[in-house]
Length: 236
Image 1 (tube, helix red, strand yellow):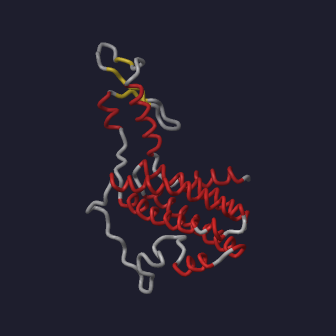
Image 2 (tube, rainbow, N blue to C red):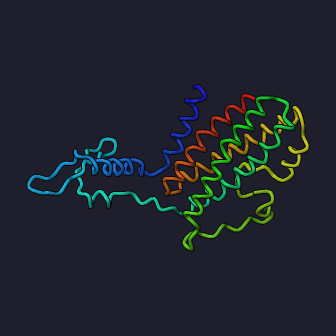
Image 3 (cartoon, rainbow, N blue to C red):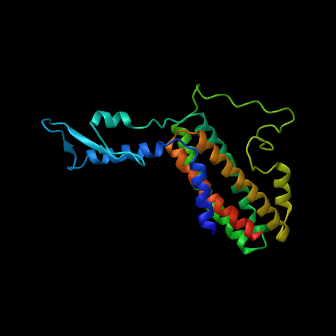
């Protein structure tokens, strides 16, 4: 199985954990589009237009009134899993930027330098998009409080014990002190683990979240970072 096909399979596996909201959303979007077109049909003996909403796989299309179409729109209100994912992934991405910023002056291999440049170019705008999302969807009192840290676990903001794949302060210090081939080795090792953690976090968001925008962001993380994991393993 080639690399592209492999990470497409990975994305499909992650998405299979989601409820079938996609089919409903597509049907609703199509219905909304049909409502604006002259092809909308009117019931015989009535001035009211009906909307043909395509069914899901194996299901017949349905005719809906405008009111029924509006009610069929899925509720994608953000839940606690969505907000947790976005706030954590912002911090996760920021560490990737910190690590990538070390590469131009320390890496020996051009491939490592180019990889770091691509990671920074992709994740910086993603941080901006997630920050804007948080402004639009602030935490609510209905969101559960974060679980207390286990005894002996690193404090928040230090070794990032709550997020998978995050490098510890000691590991970052070692990476900062390294140069040449040793830097390349450490960078690929830490960034591979970092990406694996991001894919895990995205999978959890896809399984437990409810917001379509977060779903799209998490799906992009799975696809992009899975491909980069394969690339880094080949480089190492």
